[in-house]
Image 1 (tube, each protein chain N blue to C red):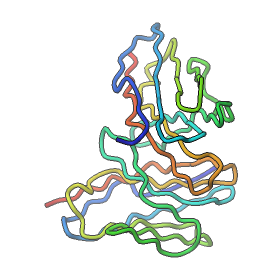
Image 2: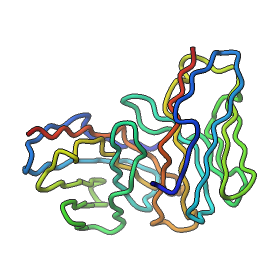
Image 3: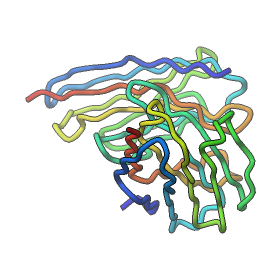
Image 4: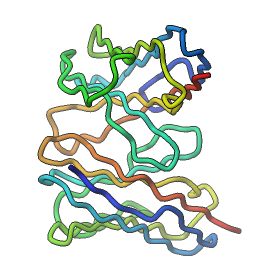
Length: 109
Length: 114
């Protein structure tokens, strides 16, 4: 089976930086995705990593280490609108996406 | 606007009712999915259709019955559900033959079984 772990909740202050970690144990690896989901809305795609290293997209960056089964999503210059759930998902050798339970990030003023 | 539209947004049904959830994608994708999302739990994959053929049925009870009449439309027919089936049901689509193709989700149907 697939096992994907991420913290349940994180709180940070507006303007700060937050790092959401994700560890995974899966049958094979064909990429790791991060999604953002606001309450009552669809999950939306943030980033995709398949090779080791850092991918940067504006205020959001995602890092992958395949040998450690580890990824993180880095949110910089936090804004109130970044309060949401962040989902880590891994595509295994069956090409299906398996999701973690999500990390709820609360940004305080 | 995600390119994936689900109706209805909210549904309350009794255990003896029959209802259907509808999903439509406008992205030209060739794969469609049903996921169940319960509070504090990972998204659970229910069904996958690729090129209108069902390629995955993740041990879902027969009271859930999917239908994919074409590559743009997906239905989930519900009958004799249980209260524990109350959850957010998400439809998604992707370009199924590309590893880096992300899932595009609809806003979901919030289902309550009474």
